Length: 233
Image (cartoon, rainbow, N blue to C red; front, top):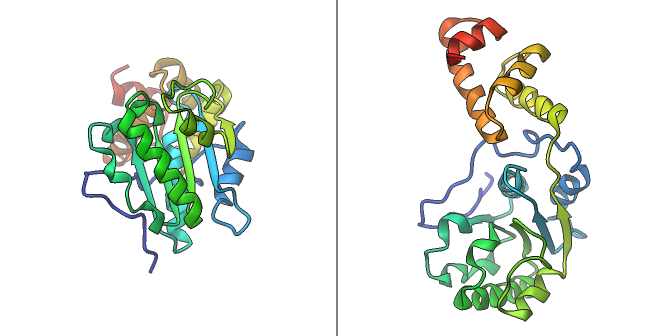
């Protein structure tokens, strides 16, 4: 049985649907392939992902943890946007894992103890051969590090700028996510949801969840009239 991602007693979990198969790699194919291969013998020790909001950075880090689990490797997802108020000793002992995924690095920068702990954690992981994937809202050169040695370490690996989907890509992402749910989303309905719905892709996925429940309840296919009725648009 796969060991699954390791858990901290902090109420942190990863989404079951945050997988590579459920991610449209439009414009990010090389990044996804490199993430998939990170646990190979010749995989990259450090990957740094950066980009703005709603480009899927958290999804990719969680997908890397699911990939590790499928390969009977132990991993841990650390969303610093949720954990920044904890003392940084939560980083201790991570070198026992195969993969560590640290999300939203920018949330703890400027805090000396956190930066020092990250620096020492990085060195322990590298010595142990543990793979590390990090995400932030800016590239390593643009982030406001206080500790120069930590800034230097973050530039040691491969850096990827996660590309935002255009409208065509957003429509494809909606259709992909609908298909995973067993829903048939016609092109005209996808375009209508994009035109009428929220801009954030994550919010659009929430719309799909609502439509999934409504269509199952009403035993209706997804059409524009049904979407209007179900969502009150």
